[in-house]
Each structure stands twice: as structure tokens, then as C-alpha cells.
Length: 261
Image 1 (cartoon, rainbow, N blue to C red):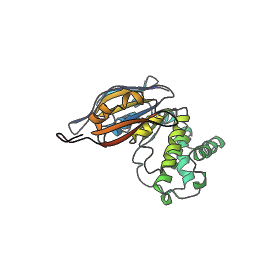
Image 2: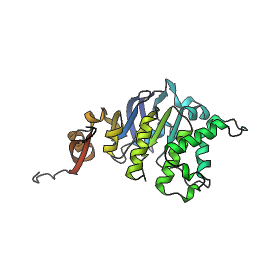
Image 3: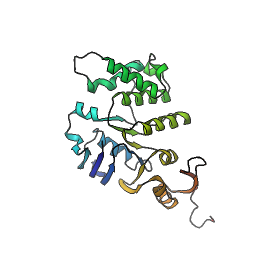
């Protein structure tokens, strides 16, 4: 399922947060949003998963305006993992993951074997099967993040929207989760803080700065020293990964004006 964002604008309290956003996520692509804090990445994602209605423009899922879908149909097409999960759940891990099956169930229907299989598969894919009987509140931050990703996968969507999905995860689980997302076959739109992870896992990057798209393209074409200096205010050195050849970035501060480089 493809995602298209057309002429999107968002305003709040008389301030324009996003302006004329145009981007496309092809079916099965993993597309990343990168940019400084406060640039508008999360605001853009909130429009995609319908937590925020834009002042102008549209979000299309295979040509259908996402904001015109009823909630159940929207949830069958798209699952989201916001940066803030909305509080603690007084449920077991198994119960939290089972919430992902609600869009596929009738109001009075019992849990089916297909539901149980989807939940078990999702927990296994994020390496959290052993947590099924634990209370969600007792988990570490990284464990909670993995469980919430499992809930989104159990939903069996066609589009996955992730806002900083590697928050609270150690480096091993960061790599595992992004590899899992990459290999899922889903259409993925994710805001990522770590530029090296974005470079290694995304097909396309959109750099968001000041509420606009500053650059778009394959990571190697977008993450240039000039753009990183302009948008992030850092000096970047690109080096190839010794095994994959994917550009990786080393950073230091930009020299002050008048100082010797």
C-alpha cells in the first residue's frame, strides 16, 4: 500500500508548523524522516495516523483520503507507534499485544485461533515471547517499546508509522527492530533520530527542517556534509561501512566564525 502526502499544512495557535509537505512512500518501501528537534517530524506523522487533522492538504492511502476512513477500516490499513504511548497499561504483555487484533474483531466476537497466532508471531518477531505473562508496568523502557511494536505487528496492517521506534532500546535491539521492520514487507514511514541507523535501513530519506522538506532522496544522496552543516549545525565526515559500504557519519562541532578549522 502506498502513502502519498499532498500539499500538507498544519497550524496551531496561529503558528504554521508544517508548510506544503509533499512526499510519497511506495508500497513496501521503508522511508525515513530525519531532522532537528522541533522540525515537524512528529507533527507530520500524527497527520498520517489521524491523530491530527491538517489545516490543508491530504494523506492518501492507495488513493483514499485517510481522514475519510472510519476508525476500524483505518486501523486495518495502518498501525502506528507514537513517540509517547499514552500512559501505562494495567495489563499483561499478552493482553497489550492482543489489543492489536481489535480492528479485526466484531464487538461481541471471541478471540480466534488466528488472533492468537498473530499475537504469538508478533511477540516472537520482536524477541518478547518470554514476557507474555508479565505485567506491562513491570517492564523496562526497552521491553515496553518492543511490546508496543509487537502490538502494531499483531494488527497486521499494510502501513506502519513509527515515531522514534528505537527509543529506549539498546544497540542490539535497535538493529534487530529496524531489520525486522525492513524485512516485514510493510510500507513503513518512520521518524528516526539516529542518522546512521536511518542511512543503513531506509530506502529514502526526507529531511524536515523548519516545517518544510529540505531534501529528499536515497540516504547517500541526502546525508551530505553540506546539508548536515546547514540543517543540523554539525560538521560531518562520511566513511563507508567496512562490510556493507553504506555511508556512515562521524560528527564534530562546526568551527566558530573566525576560528581556525
